[in-house]
Image (cartoon, rainbow, N blue to C red; front, side, top):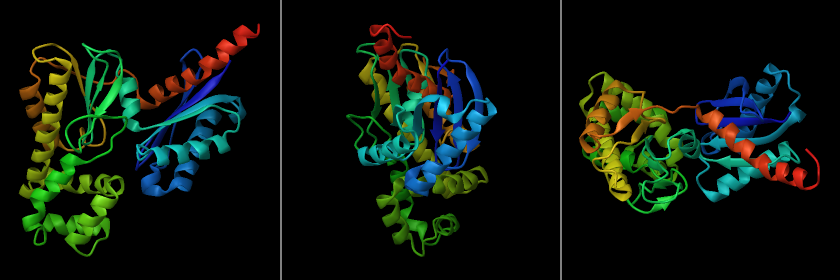
Length: 312
């Protein structure tokens, strides 16, 4: 029996499952944050390894029995970050096949339908296509077109911040944001947001969400813009896939949906307007389970080689 680890890591925690080669989940564990752009590569690696060890211990499986690892991590959309994280994991698990992908990739893999649209934290993605092959792609939200393999932008957040600029310096919400990010001025915050969006926006969103749910008009305006922008991306993708007037699965997942009642209400209204025929649903498996299944795929070449040599 062979075993794999599947991990879903972000800026606040890392979820892990240990799965056997028959897709049975034997244990689950949760550890610290593993977004390397927020906590650093060393801390991300430590969180992944610790979480994996806990999962193996819970299942009473020796760590060396793990045959493959897949880690879907926020902050690894850029090729250099993905490559560095993969190299570190290969050193930690010598001789084991390792895959590093983004948390968006896991969300797409967890959408069981052949054709689905997934809405998350400033990204819109499609899995499969009614008119093309079953590829996975994310709309590059930076320019509203083209495709990209990862969540490479925060256009919804950036547009909202730009709208907020005129009154930001005198705003109570701006003061709370500056305290959270440890910036002295709004200009300093803007510079950091442009340079390090993966570090800044996950920390800003809870501040804005809390303020919006408590009636702050500026925060509500920011989330209204974000909801409208995401719905516009969904509409563009529906047109690309020729899904207007057709039924398809629409999934809200990621760092924004589910964390603010105000945003959920606004996003629901906008999505129903642009996709009235869509069936709103949820992922049928969890992201770490999707990661574990991707890890199992890493073993397929080994299985084929064993058969060709008369082995098992």
